[in-house]
Length: 278
Image 1: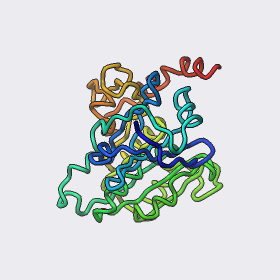
Image 2: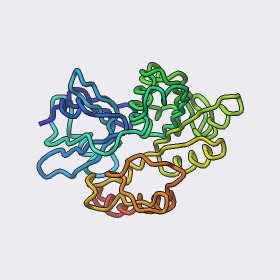
Image 3: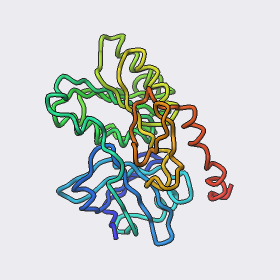
Image 4: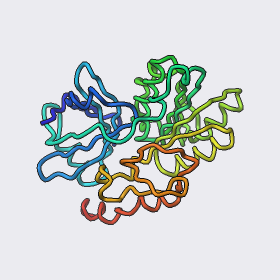
């Protein structure tokens, strides 16, 4: 059993849980994910690892209750409760994890996190920042109340740029507009990572292409089973069929067929609505 040691609501719709999982924490790396099953009859839910503490033997997951299973997870489980299964780490770690110190030297990373995607950006930015790599983070949300991880990023990057669609906090506009403004101010980057809604990652890729910045994107929202067996996270990358869970979840954004991925991302809308009684 996997005990929940801490539960916090980051905003009215997003929940953060710290879970005891020593073996997963011991080998987890930025970019990887895990599968959670609440009870014996529970659905397998893939969730990106949003942090890990090897010493404490814990991992952090961030959940937005959308479907029936995630709603149950957030409403019915609290501190001291246990999940039946937590399996991981799964998927491939971020590409920079495999770079040598010499390769990392001189890199300047910009991360663009949108909504819930801000949480899995955190362990990546922290990993690089701890190794002396220059890291800037752009965090975007619809309004001030939906911003998450602001305090955490203050110790995990060189510069944090907050954006809100309505201008209620920080820069008024989306993350890509903030990136364009940074370039107008003279900033430059060697690499980018975008994690968030599919449409946001598509336009982040287009913006980065304009400035010649290589960009990686996370296709974790497509995953269902998490083992490559169900085929639900199938996508086209560079003209070839890939699976987000076993080949990713991160891919070169310039090679991803985003239009196909967005269509696939909506394939279970009817089932989700039915499970939620709509």
